[in-house]
Image (cartoon, rainbow, N blue to C red; front, side, top):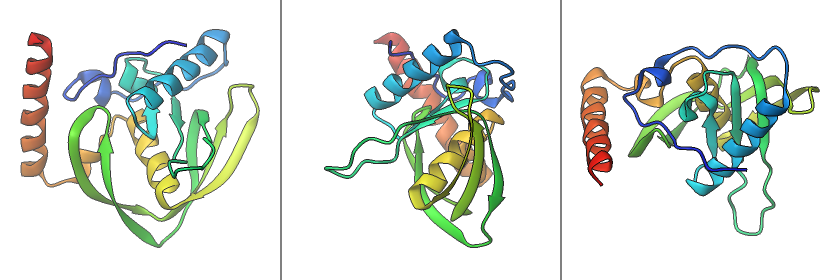
Amino acid sequence: MSIRPILIHPDPRLKTVADPVSDITGELQRLAEDMLATMYDAPGIGLAAPQVGVLTRLIVMDCAKDVGTRPRPFAMFNPEVVWKSDERNIHEEGCLSVPETYAEVTRPSEVVVRWTDPAGDQKEEKFSGLWATCVQHEIDHLDGILFIDYLKPLKRQLITRKMQKIKRDRARA
């Protein structure tokens, strides 16, 4: 497993719709492992393949963050929300591709997601709370949507300028 560099907004790859996975190869399984290692190293609770520059419909996540809680990593190929609750939750979201920035986003409080796991098996699970927010956030990445796209235009512009400055500062370092 290796740690991959995470793209920082603005980057056109973060706004591109990712391609579906037709066959889960060893290379894609390694990508999922690398993404989990990258996510844990960052540290974060979710990561989508476009964030590491791969335009493939793959996300990883693990929201088991409480002390004493065992990790519960997921690697999901072609994830799709097949049901969402009418009830909404507001969570303060952040993103590894939009560092040092957080904002409240309203999303369905519960979702049912269907995906293919790294072994090629079909899975379906209901997620709620932080897990529901995270899986929706990561699936959005596969459709070229960032959490800041839910914000008002002025706030989004300010965040984009801040990210451009962070990218310049990192390039100089």
